[in-house]
Length: 121
Image (cartoon, rainbow, N blue to C red; front, side):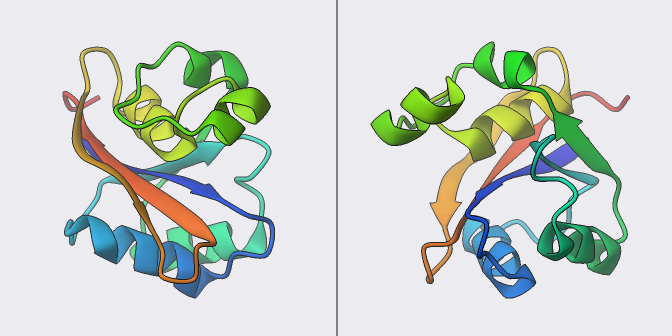
């Protein structure tokens, strides 16, 4: 299973999210993931519909247990993880998931995306 994890600002658009995904170089994913409190945003829901993939809503404890390759002090203070995108991708991809692409930032700086791969679930 290949999962794209996202972190994004409230003002992010579907184009912001898609641009972050494109920046990873991955063209097809099996699911997308983001913090549970962000999953209901219109832009994220629209991206899920456009991609035709399920959404994984990641809880704070699940994010905080994942080891991320990149670290933002601001994100660590706010969310308890070094990278929301990486933590969400890893958590959704399951046990023993590996990071395939670290977080990439959209050109407008509104969204980040990371890719993780795990066993099919």
